[in-house]
Image (cartoon, rainbow, N blue to C red; front, side, top):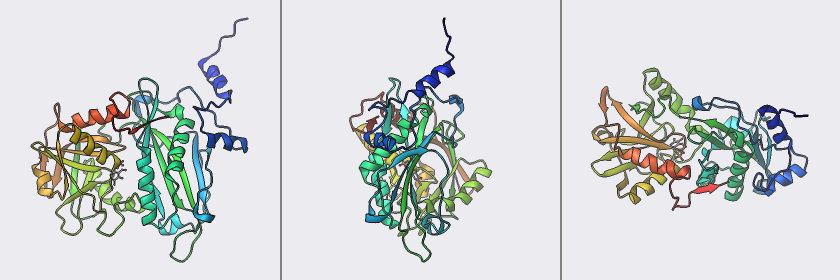
Length: 380
Ligand SMILES: Cc1ncc(COP(=O)(O)O)c(C=O)c1O
């Protein structure tokens, strides 16, 4: 008798095969399975979502990675667990004193079917630097990268088809130990979860309209603006929401001392182009050292552009030929206009932009289409 199997049934059959190939699961995860941890089903079939309208919102995926650090200042071997809520003491360091760091990286599906990460070791290093600044324990670079790989593979049915977006991966380090007096927590939890995403800005790939805010500052010299501390993000919500209410895409922040030099945007770095020179604010502890920022600097120099990292006055921004922003979530986004002190300037957009040239090269490397001579891509 012929039994016709529906795609759904086929999917179920595939998922029930618990043979975990070495390619699907690292040794760490495999040993976690032996210790009666949840069975990680590496579904081959794609999640049932509209890949054409992803946007940048949280979509719950199947698994997350979890590891704790209590005694000896070392993180235990982490494990994949079902994605879900955490249980925290009300006195947890992260809730009371903001001991928390996050990272953002992404996994993409290349046209040849490979699953690729972009420079996850750089996120690991940045988390370590942030942990040192915030008096927290941090996982080793190896554990961080392994955790990112495990999370991407366990949730691979959520990695969008080529060209439709990416699986945004969010490593999180939080002080979970209870603490009453102001001091570092005694326990830290390292988590990695993921969500499929499309474009960061609602504008999609259309040019952004940015607003220069000279009232609110993101950070100041000696603060923690150079690390990816959770405490840097709530303060920008007010200027960001105000700008969005007025129809802007995002905010450009100025330095808090002179109110004259541009720093960065709420969640991305900024570049200006004037003539054949590309300039970006130097990293002196008040802006985040973006991984995309430094990748773009390398790519631009290799393409023959002159790149300067220096103080960039807001007046120069207003006189630039071209402006663009960079970040993991935004990749390279062209800026169409800037509004500052009631004056709006529009920049050239369309074909032949420096930002488009850089965008194509960066994304080409990220999706495995352009030769990766830098060794940035991690094939998982
Ligand atoms: C404040 C801020 N600046 C810049 C960036 C860009 O950094 P990256 O290129 O590493 O994503 C981000 C995003 O991570 C950010 O939150």
